[in-house]
Length: 251
Length: 272
Image 1 (cartoon, each protein chain N blue to C red):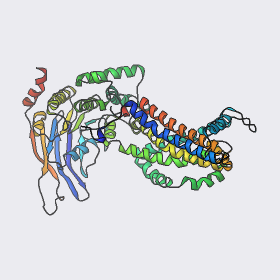
Image 2 (tube, rainbow over the protein chains, first blue to last red):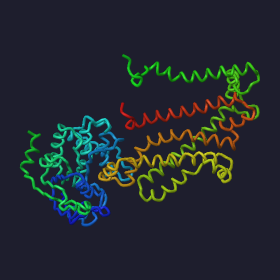
Image 3 (cartoon, one colour):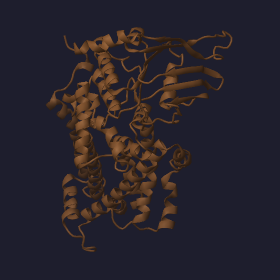
Image 4 (cartoon, rainbow over the protein chains, first blue to last red):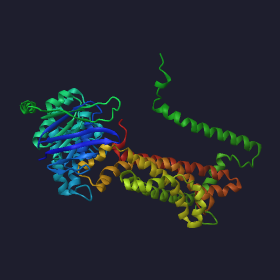
């Protein structure tokens, strides 16, 4: 359960306004896709949701409470690259979140607790189709498999919100289609609210239940940094079409 | 048509032979030069013949010294290895602590980074007298010299390695619930160990330099002490095998560390 309110949020760096006056109400279990030209602040918006950046003005609330000004386990994240740990095997990568939660001091589990966590991690790997690669290191995986791992690693911790920063941007088209099915299935099974930044318009339409485009409304040619971007289109996409996509792999 | 020079790779045997070739050539040059000099003056001490070197080495390595009752070569080796081992251990521990603090915790970085960057610039040999005055002429001052010479560089190197960890990893760990402590324990330290080994390997050369400097100035045993002691008698037949031995010790510790890295941190090895 996670609804998100964005209340009059501005983001400025010095005199450079990146985002101005964002106002959004996102319902629980929404799949929000975000598109826009590069430099329009969509990644900045995502960083504020993660807690990597703070709004200059305004506030962001999750379920009515202001978000913590740093990353926390309520908000999972998948970046385009580098988001799994190179020194851990595939299985250890997925185990990590479970171990951190249960073992604040040692940071790892032993004996029965470890076996239980291992079961959960293996089930997650099975679900993303990586069970056969559990003993490999991330560097030995293809790009698509690395993103599957990164998604599994985030989802196994059951975040309320999952933030995706162009997660499929570097993948081959064939692989991307598989990843779309995967993310839709996980989204349905785990009842997360998803925000996904993308540069692929078609992907944004087919995956999202709500699509936001970021762009500058006002533009001063003498002072291009004076005005920031805000949401120019806010489209509710038909659920039926989206569910048709989700149903496809089962058939 | 023959391939370009850049595309011609020697085979296994040829590669080995090429590697050995310069060593054989150096040895040959020495033997010839030594014979030429000894032919002119049989008492020449500058380039002793190989047989003289072997004889002297035998008495140093396998016979007890009449005065001290010790086998000098091994006593010297043991004394030097103890010093350099202790110093490298202390440096490694210190560097890990500093690097993690500086790399991960912004307050620690603000506190320690300027100090470390300044201390790293002090020429260690310039404060050797201070060490001797404050810590005395015993082991402590020699180990301290090596630590002061080596630890700042290793620390700075490791702090850079921590800074090189992708920001995405640090963020991801936090979204998986990692506390600062857990982040250090499960994400930063494990990725730092192989880099520590690399940093120590690179620092080994200067560690030996400082060891020998300290031993040359104030010591009663040690490889560096012996070399500088017998220098007074132009005893090249002692100095040369000692230098070869020091080189071999350095080479083998380097190989050992490299093997340890490959074995213990398989994930950090480049893909073959």
